[in-house]
Image (tube, rainbow, N blue to C red; front, top):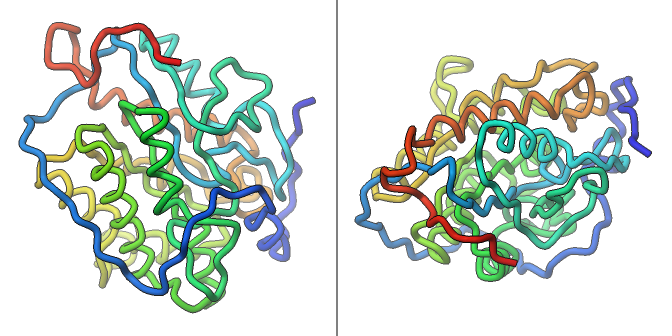
Length: 302
């Protein structure tokens, strides 16, 4: 039965909504920044071919999984179900891949890498159930060989920053994203990655979100690296990466859309997230299948 998102904004739901006790893939949490070897690729930019099979990995936290308000279970895949319909309707041959299939009973393409409560990189002050950086993303890429990764993560890290948990500074969180991107491209240098700015969850300060996303107009220039500078850096070195900047404003920052202050599960919030993802995918889609394509025209792999 589909859960209808409850309204009401309860600050005390912070821990229960974010730190859900899901089984985690073990990932060591380094105490400080770790060096990642990154090798630039020389290939010219490519575009997605609409009529070629494309293995899509949705990578992130509970918002990627499709969690409801206060950690409740829903079955339509959150934004993933709506995005799959948009892609199919518009002629894409997308196949979602990943190790998880929860929160997806009502949709056909259930696979994902959305890990509720996970941070980009754990610090001892509040490590949570796990981190995306490290063995989790390595195993996911090796096993499922994605052509396109939709990466939206960092909300749980920013919530810890709001609580002043040790280690979770803006500089460290941005560096955690840098490490994650470096790991992704180390495992598969030619993969296409779309990084989304995080949705505007009301439990995170507006300027904190703006500085993490790299929105200099909202609250002034960020003092540290951010999503925008990271994407520019990786792109300048030849990696296939773009920023879905519209995600920051895709869902109105109010109680109707964020009943628990974290998850955009009310009033069409997840559908709005899907629309932002679709716009970002459309922006890197070629108009004909005869141009250079991101993926080969092959039958889907199991």
